[in-house]
Image (tube, rainbow, N blue to C red):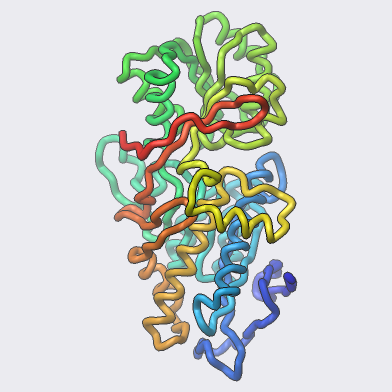
Length: 408
């Protein structure tokens, strides 16, 4: 049974998998104190409300599940893991406020999230300054780990505190272009993005590879992600003779865009990245049949390594699905748990007073078999797992068509 407690340092709700909580505020954070356990909180930042809440709720639940399983296994003796979920509403300003709240809670030793790359950009520096580990299961903006000049080959890691279990837009956009050109045999594409960090970066990566393969970008446009009337851009698409639309953005706009495209008589597929790979894309689009998406990793339903995660998630009774990032979120939370374990093991079974810095230091050594495969991080904090999957909507659901370990 979940017991709800309040973290007074932040005013935020903490979900606890069991009732034991050590509120000792002294420097001695020993895990054995009259039977009490030391609380370690893992923050979770995601859009829990709003248009992207389907993905955000899957992130929140999956991170919470990881802590519940770690507690059940008594993975780190003397340590009680809790989660502190905060809603960023997919807004960078709110994400930055949440980062301040996490930093202010001394029990938070790592943060999972966020969903959006532009939100992450507002959180990275505060976390880095506080030596607070951040692991995103969904951020794919390449510059987050490799710097703004990565395209020229000048890769420099901006923030040592940032890690991710999702691969980059450089890989995802390139994989999508290769799939559309080589497998789907489409060579004329109209390119659209929502001008946000994620969408623009994904579209740029797609364009670079697609044109190198001999494909032609017959037109390009930008939209406002809050718009839902796309008739003007649809009219432009029809005039070009495009055989597909590639959209860099997320499902709240992609669904209506795709349907309006088909309603206009243009019977061509829309393809996007993991931002549209969600059940809600199909709910928002009555004519989604044939549309395409890429997502990081292999379908968890097809992985032996994910069977226990799926079973545990169902047994936990969450009413919201784990969606595209559930497996990666579980692995992100578990990587923080593994780092905490190493720090405690190296300190005679106790949590040191400089636990945040020690956990961050331990992250570079984390390596385990996770839900989505083998988990470890390279020198930039990127996942070493570059598995990608292409999906297509068939009979009202996303169906995996091709999975491969992909490197541009």
